[in-house]
Length: 332
Image (cartoon, rainbow, N blue to C red; front, side, top):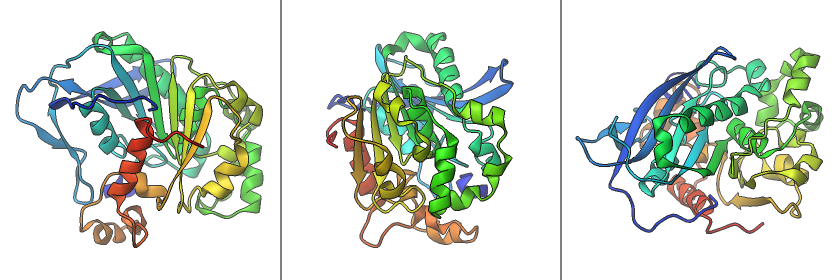
């Protein structure tokens, strides 16, 4: 979103780790000619003064120690996946919480979908993002970081476009014609974004969208306000390989749950659950905004990123999501 935005189902220990370590790694996928800029958050022993990361004039960040040595064994691995025009910072508030409670967290910028690169045409060719995640899992589990990770406890948490990715990695399959049909019937914000981009999809593009991007190493998937749900092939939800939670925002105008999610899922799939967070809009799941954020973002026509309903505090939305991620609220 230009300039400033540039736009678990498991229970945690009640004791928090003292320090977050953070490292930057650039992973090169030679097969696909993609370089994935990645941040790793992990429990660390205090080795030097903390610095603030992921902050700017509009958003708060978190404190961590750069390149501190990791500590701990058998840590659950979480992969955080950003949405359209997003970046690794968008879910950093969640990543820092997970790390403080004993997790190893991976968050990356996904080429073509990230800040300054995303276009409707590129985002409709969404299949590279789940492939990125599988590639990142390969890299992490074949590195020295693997000594700290429980390879049998891997969770993907994706937001918006990243929510699609979480579902695809769990085994959901998609036929984009279903989403085209939806957009012929509805004009919510996501459909307005794509405009005429559907017409540029080739037959090979359709085949790639319909591909199988399941990664059976992923044990849990959490899809926050996920994109493309109207394109899901219903039978694929019967064969999910990961325990999967879909989270919708009650006031989301970009991906309205009552239109884009609930009509396309049912409650009888044993691996799939759904939860609505009351009062949440589409952008409620991003970082906490500083007091001056709305005014600053208004200069770019993006004040909506930090605007909540009058009686809603973003911190309360985040707490509701933390309750879901930590397994306290799992009912349909």
